Length: 126
Image (cartoon, rainbow, N blue to C red; front, side, top):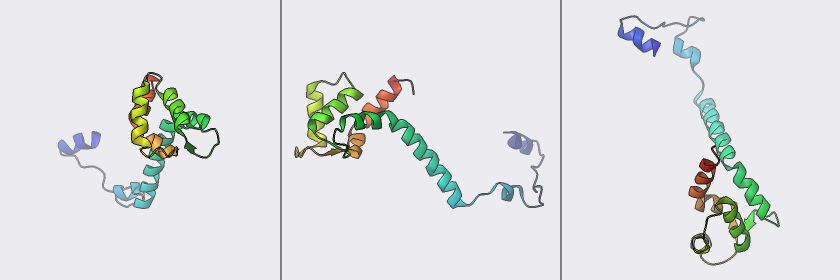
């Protein structure tokens, strides 16, 4: 904001840095470094967002294989949203496990329960 105000008044922003190079060169980082920083930041936020759900999923994944069956999924869903009715749970099961193979992995749960996870975090004040 200061630079913009100064530029509007006719003053010019410094064009050289301490080392005699352009000010932009002093602050430049490699695109690959920028991308790594950005992705690390996003990953950290994603991990923080999913931390409670990871604990819930692991708690109900009794054989610790990263996959839950229908019974375990029902327990996970009830832990995330205790107000879910049996009809709502059955509807979600029809979507997430349409062939009733009893193999619902963590990623599928996150995908199909994303709105419930957002609501859970909002209700907790995060």
